[in-house]
Length: 191
Image (cartoon, rainbow, N blue to C red; front, side, top):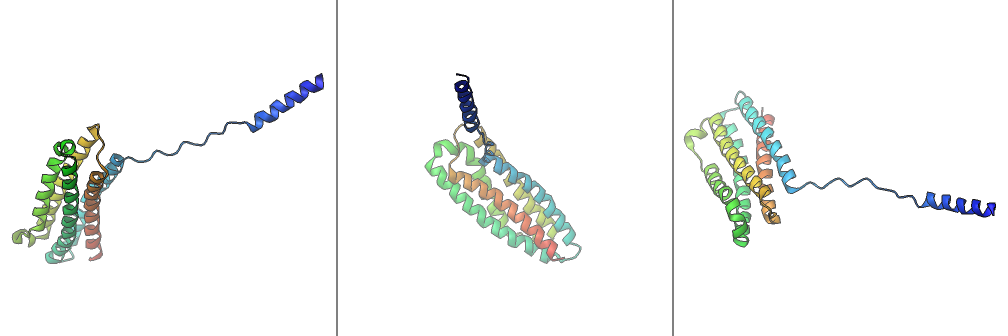
């Protein structure tokens, strides 16, 4: 009888060691659209300052024309990206006008204004690289501020933005960061 008790006890111990519950570490939470946009927004703020510093440093080594041309080339590419993002936003507004129109209306207007302002050449301002850079940066900052407001409104809204709208907003952020970074790096290389 004692042997039987030991045998049952030994089987329980063996079963207990094999039947252990193993828990894997929880997976890292996936970044939400809003977290990603906020992260890029922080990088844009740094890029604004870096680009401004690059322009100021470059003016000592390069002619105004070279600096203006660098800014203009990168700005033209940025305008193209803005117009693509605006087209996507307008298509989404047509599909979901009742949902997104009040949220995205101001951003759409600011996109139009910024693209128009950046694409026109102002001969007086273009003569002075520092003033031209400040004009471009002011336009970019006001657009970026409007994009941030739109993202905040979308975050507060219970309905999630469509993937196309998310992609368009992300494109605005990414294009802004890319333009600022590329302009700053190009000016640093030309020294």
